[in-house]
Length: 276
Image (cartoon, rainbow, N blue to C red):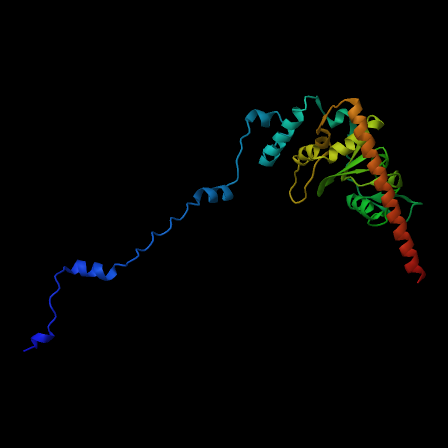
């Protein structure tokens, strides 16, 4: 028989109440934080913005382009900004002759006695950076191609149209009369006083957006002379055009002087090294 003194008095409570008493805490657990719904943010980050283009916009395009990039809203916004100037917009071809030579087979000559000094887009970028073309080459006078359309002249503006697109250059006196690659668009303003203005405008974002919107090609990007010629140019008043032209011409002359000085430095350096 168990000892009655060791018996525990029965607890007057249900089993559920006992479990609740054991699990209960003096300070209740805080409610779990509500996780924010990131669905909208994820959707914005992973879903590109869309835009619509009317069939009429496509049909009235000269090239009847079907690629979406050609109708990028940035292009439309750019054109709207130009139109908001309240001036007439006219294609570049109304201000200048735009020419892109056809492809041709190059035959190299040993020196200037048998050919014309030759430059491509890389040579242009090298010249304006270091004062000398990337390499010395001569296009043979015996090449089966008409030379005159290839020659670049100091009254021209040049735009690269293959690979690296839209780079704008003037033609300094040092490159006047050189034969150029077919991958450079030649632009000859109808009036000399337009050169500085057109040179500055074609390098601006307003023109670049238009020019680069025509980009096409499989592995190598291209634009054509006709596409460059279609770039819309604002017909500003003559006073503004002249002021911009003077500033651009002054800048080009300063850069040409800098290029010449760099060329002199490189020549002096080569002389010192060769003497040693």
